[in-house]
Image (cartoon, rainbow, N blue to C red; front, side):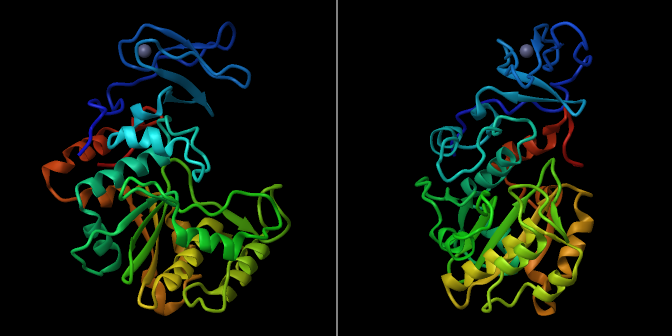
Amino acid sequence: MSHENPELPYGIGEVQATARPSKAGDKSVECFVVGCQHRLRVPSRTFPGDVCPDHGIRCHYSSNRPTYSYLQARRNIIASADLFTQQIVRHPFKFESHRLGSERSEDALSWNVFRSLQEARLLSQVGEMLTGIASSHEPTLYLWGICVSDDSCEPWHLLIAARERFESALPVERPLTEPDIALHLPGKYLILIEAKFTSCNTHYDEGPRQSPTSLTKQELVSIYQDDSLRIVNVRAAESSSRVYYQLWRNMVFAEWMARLDHPQTQAFHVNLVRDGADVESAFEFRRMVNEPFQGRFQRLTWESLYRRLDQRTELSRLKQYLESKTEGLQRAFSL
Ligand SMILES: [Zn+2]
């Protein structure tokens, strides 16, 4: 196991905001690391913000709430930080990598949790927990469609094929489907996981296009469907006033990719969220999953994943990270 960062990211009790940035003057705050005396100007549209010379962070006030970001994304990483820095941060397949140093980054959280589980060879346990399918073989781990099980960081050919099938002629220019996390055991199961940390599931409503890069609800449902698919209920989506589009696309991709993999491969889609979050959207989306396949979509919380982790010492670093993790300088998880 590789811990190139001996320290964990700043955790609960190590960061606090003493005061809001001054309305007038230089818009500066005291560095959020407890005890630090440096004053830092917060980022604005025209200024990237000062970096604390002692702690390597920028302090932000976004929507009146404090948060911080590391200048070096690797300081946000608890497992295989070198691999992450060298292979992922600038990977051409990764759509949005500039926020990886942020306290609020769900991508850094996803990497830290699933790369740690992969290094501890516990992904088969997670796979069994999500699918009920036991195996002594570890599934392959993909983060944002990049294989990170063998450090090759190759793009996932099944995902590329699905993008070609569904996204080669989109009516607007928009990012292609990028499953946050995936576990694949060829011939057995294929799980696409949509991870949420500080944001919520988003939906398209009935009616016209909501932004230049969004699809309409009607376009979503007509583009992302295929006669070979059995899991999603197209009629339910068509008659509903809104559709949670990331969940829809991931469920369609999961089944289509699983069929391409092997006739026996079962498709699953998991919405990984915080305790209490996105209950309604998962409930609503489940109505768009055909009856015999209800178990193929599930809502899972980071907290329940933590509670079901093995008591092994290999995971003590991951557990400590999740226990102390902050969001807006407050405790992030109800643990
Ligand atoms: Zn500082």
